[in-house]
Length: 338
Image (cartoon, rainbow, N blue to C red; front, side, top):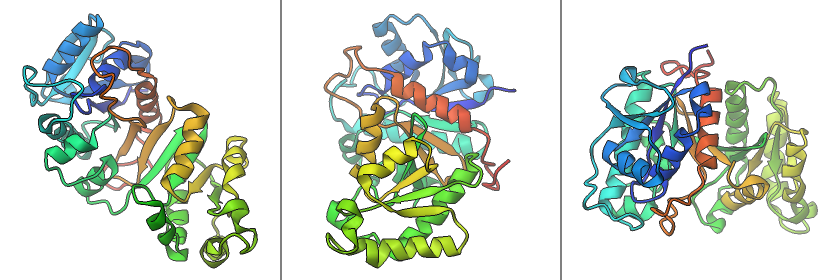
């Protein structure tokens, strides 16, 4: 089978993104599963490889078809948008934020054109993005806007466990306000569809509870009885295989043991804690609902250790592996299973 071309955004050039990308692609196993193409700045990649003692040849290219895709060669779709003399590694700066956003724009152009099969993204820095006056808070919002996709789904995958999120970057108080019957029903349907598109036949979804013991029938809060239980009941009427609400202190364990194919987490930290406690480095974020597949490391730019050569590339490697695993399941034009 032809190895898919995976576009790998370099992330914020002042953070650990360039380092973990170079380290990941120094692993020959990555070339067995895909043809990796770095979307970034060839000058930054060259300096990073030199600092790390990686002797791979830097191969700037203007089109994915021109890549060499062999271990020992770092193919870079070169945007040439970083002044390496002015780059302050480990610091927030507008130039870095703007560059990181331009790599994301490039990934969308290439994926929508069918030139790359999927995207794996390196970390970006929200402060640098803000300093560059880029009007988005994170990757998911950027990809949603650039592909005209309303409210993309975020799914974590770690050691076989899959976790979706009903809410993401909002306060806990706002997240609770967003737990409505209609929103839950919509997400149950969309999460089920996403699992099918990722190759899960007849997926079973568990909805996490919000309150301790899922509220104990109203003793510890009424969100379960008022919003969650009616949504689950309606989803079942529609023929979906869904259970819940199941107390959050057990639902993730049950899914990990194979009782459910995925869990719908109700708020950001509920699912993040479960995934990252299980295995922090191997937690991969998957954005579902886009016209193409996008995976990502689930850690930040780690400016405090950037440039020191000590960052782990495990999460970047996992993001590439997952992108290669699912690449080609979504047709760029029709957004359907192929």
